[in-house]
Length: 328
Ligand code: SF4
Figure 1 (cartoon, rainbow, N blue to C red):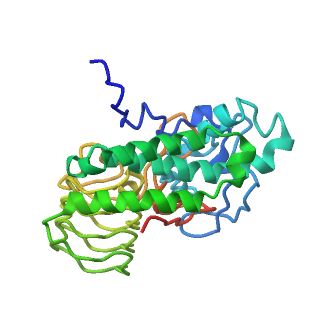
Figure 2 (figure 1 turned 135 degrees about the vertical axis):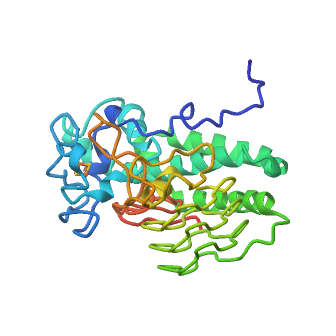
């Protein structure tokens, strides 16, 4: 069917929001710092290529990231920012070919990641029927954000992305409120729920924006229509939990959590391969052959859920692969 002029693409693939490591210059493995921890075996400064990054921008240990102490790399998501910077902003010229571009390219990447993460949420908001009254404003914000991503490197580096994020976040908040209207969900925005015992909890329609749910026991919890933007789900046990209809949940957040065959996810998200009936561990392996992490968390990179837990979560994007939360 032909799209009407006013209709907007909301498919992440069509919007270029799915990471394509083969079209990227390994930016997440170079530009972003990470600290030795349970997520990373070593310290690495921003701008320093990871010692596991090969000359062809592939990861030399991508099949053994967890075993080699880099689980954080398995759950980071750039939302397609890597290939946009590599192929659009820099038109296919890598930092290896043109070292003079490196500093700025590394500075532009986290900005682009934040913009792409916003595109992701805006696209989801446009799929929320309850948010229809906001659709014109959401479309305008999506168009403006897309326009910003296509600026030159100088403009991107100088962009006040925090200000733009703030404006978009207001819209996302309103969309979330419309989606959860009438449910009387709990208000737990930004709550410290680390290790919380929430087995079987009624969290339907809850506001869990930016909540710290690291290691929380959410087995069998009702999270339908809950707003989970930026929630840190690293190691949280979602076995048997119902997350259908949850708002602004990303694959990265899911990847960083644990779950099982009984966990119910929104239709747009996939069950991580590492989930088992016993719960499994956090994180997900990158797509075979890409050489770098897929979507997810842990690394300290992050936007509200970008390679979300571990590497970063939260809308906005951080400077590292760790936990980068924003949108709260
Ligand atoms: S995926 Fe992780 S371990 Fe592999 S090159 Fe990138 S940063 Fe290094």
